[in-house]
Length: 178
Image (cartoon, rainbow, N blue to C red; front, side):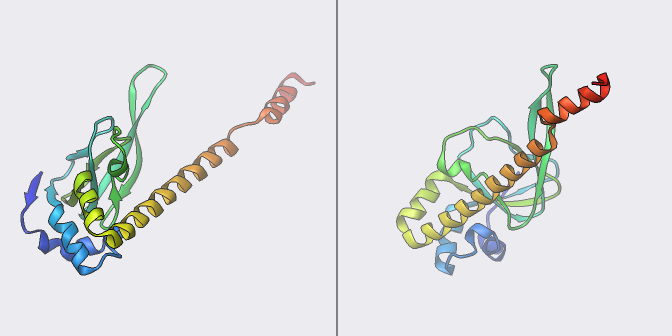
């Protein structure tokens, strides 16, 4: 991980991050000023599941993989791939609202440039720029609601795919001949 000092070189990329897309040029400049831009090499861990991390991340260039750990019956942990995120995507939204442990691990797939914003710097931006802060928060909330909807749909699909009691009764009746 290497800090990139010339943040303004990434201004156009930052403007394409969905969370910052509706900010004015002046508001975006303030966000960039409060942020840090980092270059990560391939296969570096950005965020580790279970750790506290008060940062919000915007992907300016490159791709990251998001995974979670699932506990097997043996007690071992199995890494489960969730998704790939690319330029314009964000992660770490919960870190701006709550002091909670990360729910996933994020690793770079190639060279990745990330904009990182600390919770306290975001709070200062919202206080100083209420209009821009409201726009930013509305986009973050919208993104979280989209993720929640996708998770709910996945759960509904899983429930539908599971057998219900009538399926079990029919299977037993077929097997026992009754």
